[in-house]
Image 1 (tube, rainbow, N blue to C red):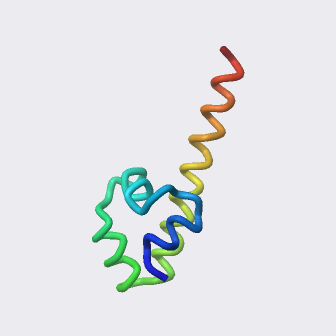
Image 2 (image 1 turned 60 degrees about the horizontal axis):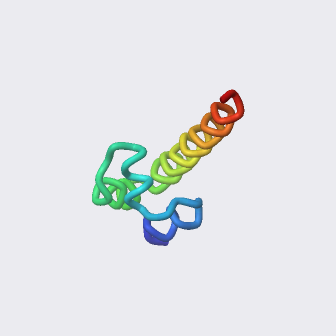
Length: 65
């Protein structure tokens, strides 16, 4: 599966959205996928967790206003 496909399956709008969250380039993610697939999956799942945490924080902040 290509990095962009996994990013979309995880709920990101694009691979670039995941890259922006992690401050890496799409090429870096592609290289990680090739060189160490297990680490790549862990990194993508970590990005998903970061994104979900941001969403939850925004919801909680909005409720306090």
